Image (cartoon, rainbow, N blue to C red; front, side, top):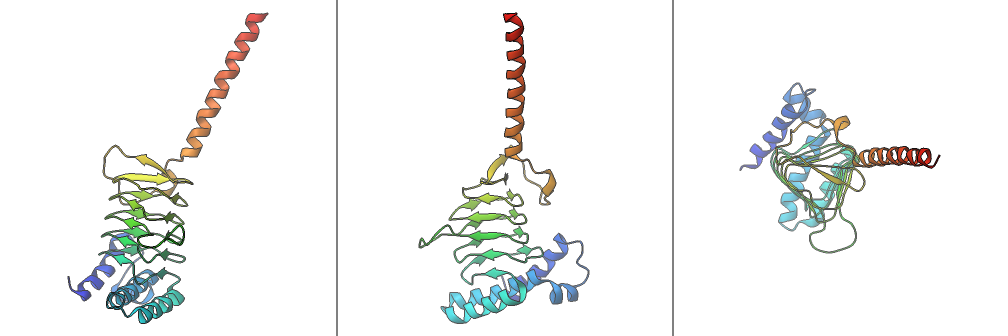
Length: 216
């Protein structure tokens, strides 16, 4: 695929994902996510040719103007969309597939000073919501979602949703997960456990009352 065709796709995906987008001029001039992606594509091309210093300079200039930090070594596929984008961090050995969406405050980072592949792999059509942290050499499967504020430290299978700290998988019975994410409707595993405990405590109270009545 041609370089300029890929840049056009970076614009087209904005219209697919953001109802606020109106014109090509507006997107090209005002969308920091698009600016960050375009800067990265240039920096990554130089990085692959071993112009590491120039690539890092471009990356840091982009970070200064957009608030989005993408290491030039990261591999990013087609139609990648960063919504808003402030505070996004993408590490050196990240691999991001096609049609992936991430929101502001997302970190795709490492867990230490290990060498080699140390950042996540995000497969096609995945979505990572606001403030989520995906850490280490793990894989987020195709058509999967990471809920807002989650911290994910383990692999997520395809067609799954992960929520909570640490992230817990909510399997969707093999059905394809919708691309749009209703942040407020995601299941909360901690809340569910607390409800189960509350129910068990109530059952124990009733049993104790019955025993006390029997003793009388």
